[in-house]
Length: 491
Image 1: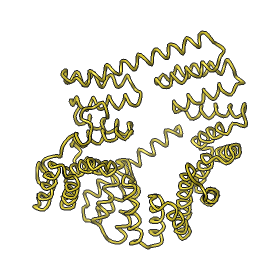
Image 2: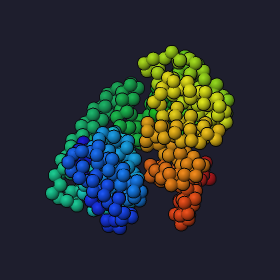
Image 3: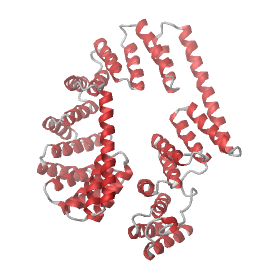
Image 4: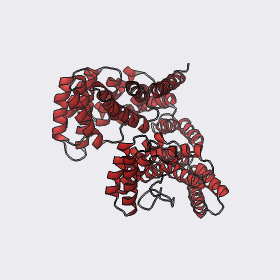
């Protein structure tokens, strides 16, 4: 977070003291303490590569020590490995939920990477533990500010001032936000005057709707879009603007109806058909979604976006053969791709391999990933799908190697950790299975399948109480999912 003086990085918070045996953390083993102290000395000297190695050994000696994992994260962050740092911060938080420094550095790291929503979530979790921390409120304000929620940013900065009247950063940031809001209000006022002066010009209405949405004034945007429809009911721009407002508000039903009106008025609009398909799929109207995606692809001359979405609908509805056919056609078509189309080819390869695995065609999936890896040797998806196929064929040692390679390229993927944990259980490596499953749920605390895998691994390790707790958490998440699904269906 660029506005926060405590932003993580080379000049951010230092290594945590404590470590193995300190403050009741973990097993007080001589080996863990030795490596922990070595890591701190190396970090103090600026040798973060040596610090990383030492903290990795400390973690291996005492996997339950959150402080060691926190210091490992700091070392990785200073080495320019943000993904490795994030994984270690999240594991540290799972082991020691009260480690405020880990929340701060993790949130600030997310902010530096432009992941403001993730940063905000982390900071809000930290505030639940320490609501009197003015530094945390500044970080929350920075995240809201980056997301354009200026009123919320103001409340956060003001709270930081209440907690610490000497915090000049809070005052500076608050003043900056006020200036941005004033400028935004002036621009909206100018656009409102344009509409007043040209009350039949849809272009001016559209500009004002965009400004309202940017300012999160959704209801005013909707009121104006509705007025556009009343003014020009046969102009596709009016329901299109209305549809975009409904999308911003998350109102899928009304968004779908508005896009339906757009395609009736402008039947050659490929993008409108794709939007309509998206919301029909969201409503569970699968056949209508498929028809609309096909229409969009046809009108756009084979739009990759529409075709990918079509294949995804097939896959989600277990129509794997149709998904395979769609992806295979794209792979064949883009084999000679270059430039921007190179990414389209990689995505098509990934979809094809995944669909083959889901269809139970594991040998075909291996053949597919051979071609995928030949063209894209560093793509984690190719390695993951290859591992999945090998796993299903009972070739577990090869699968483990492929999963581990996939993790080297995609270290923040909880699904890979989870599946690797399952495979470790298959070969009887219970300790590694526990470690991988713990990583999975640390990276995604709402991952029900991950908790189920963790429960199985802990039970195999003889840790029955911990296994029961993990299973209970999995059930809680399943119940929450069922409740959300019921609400969406109006039950």
